[in-house]
Amino acid sequence: QLQLQESGPGLVKPSETLSLTCTVSGGSISDTSYWVYYWGWIRQSPGKGLEWIGSIYYSGSTDYNPSLKSRVTASVDTSKNQISLKLTYVTAADTAVYYCAGLRTSSYGYMDVWGKGTTVTVSS
Amino acid sequence: DIVMTQSPDSLAVSLGERATIYCKSSRSLLYTYNNKDYLGWYQQKPGQPPKLLIYWASTRESGVPDRFSGSGSGTDFTLTISSLQAEDVAVYYCQQYSSSPPTFGQGTRLEIK
Image (cartoon, rainbow over all chains, first blue to last red; front, side, top):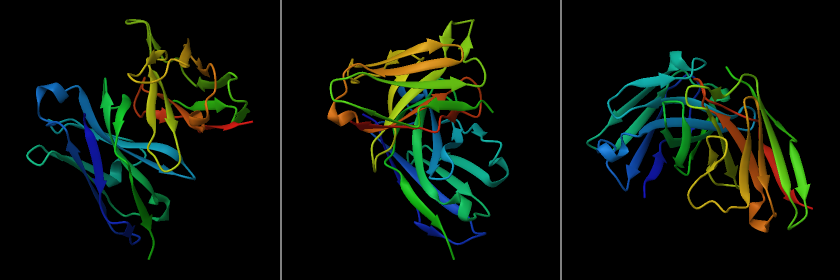
């Protein structure tokens, strides 16, 4: 049973870089059994609802939401069974609950496993 | 981007009664080469992440009670709860995965009448 756990700072100052990590347990993301998954980041704020940020495959190939693409970088560390997200030049509009999830069928597929989420507030 | 619009925004249904939630997409989600609709439904309870209920518009995720069903094709979809239970109080979202970026509906809040 796969489990995902997000971690990162709860508070980030405007114009700084948000860095989050998602640790996958219950299986190795580089194992052939889990090649069916893309690993993604989704955020949820009262103002914008659920918003897909981007996804990464175990091989490192990425797909980003065009609305955030200029500020987002996703990476994968198979040795640590982790995926990471960096979002640069944050503003108050980036305040949200950030989830990592496993996506099926494609980098923009349906999401059948989710982390519990981590709340990020952008404020000075 | 494909726009997903749900209706109603909120819904109150009596215990044991049927609840129906609608989702409309701005473009067809049906791929004729495999005859599949790229549409999922999620349930979100307070303080929890969304939980996948339905994918391919009508395939129930493992462990999801059979009172939940999905139907529809093309641009119009429905999530039906046949007999509402107290634990079904939640916000429900549809999501398209037909094209990138994947997009969600605004959510429908389901309450007990």
